Amino acid sequence: MNEVARIHGQLYAELHAAWAIAKKDIAIYYLKPNIIVSGALFPLFMFLAFAVGKPAGPSVMIPGLIAITILFSASSIEPVSIPIERRMKTFDRLVSAPISLNAVVLGESLSGFLYSSGIAFVPFIAGMLIFGTQILSFLPLVTGVILTAFCFATMGTLFAAYPTESPGDIMSMLNMIRLPLIFISGVFIPIESIPSIGRIAVYFSPLTYGNDLIQAAYLGNTHFNPLIDVAMLCVFILVFQIIADRLYKKFNT
Image (tube, rainbow, N blue to C red; front, side, top):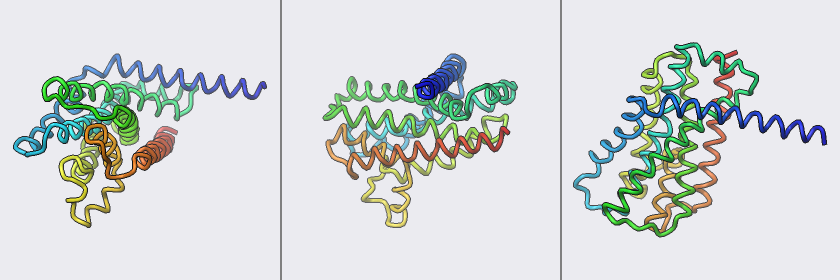
């Protein structure tokens, strides 16, 4: 019983620390201009650039907007907050605190997850009020938003492990991954229409599975089995978390 109580207490302390880190990021970074531009405005303008003039209806376009909004907003907090804190020398105190690096990674990812989940409501509400889009099933929508947001928040934390004090360095590397993901994940180009060579890359993109779930909420059908979408997103989250933990250990010990 003592061992169980110890593990329970340690888990509570780790989760409490992760939440404290997330609250710190929420209070300091959510309204930073570069966060707003890269997390909300950039995906909107990119979406409009590719969507205007296309014959697809709102029920097809709105899910894509939600998906790329999550991609950019979820992965934009940590690449800004962590380099700034390195510059201010507060991140050193954070990683030397009596908590595990898992808690640090989880806390940083949690802030991106919460930010992205909130931003995702904007195109969702706009679709309902302006275009009258209907939701056929809320379960895949909620599941897709939650898992996709946490997946890309963890990816942002992973990239932020790179030991630099400049957010621009990380954003440049991150955009080399985020931009191609949009075009191989079925957001603008249906998966069936992607050339055979590019179709192989579809399976290695977490956005593929997140977009598939969100599309199912509006269209009622998925390219993959929804359970495969959920399973693959969970796998990506776990892989990103493990790699991020190892990178932070490498660069901060």
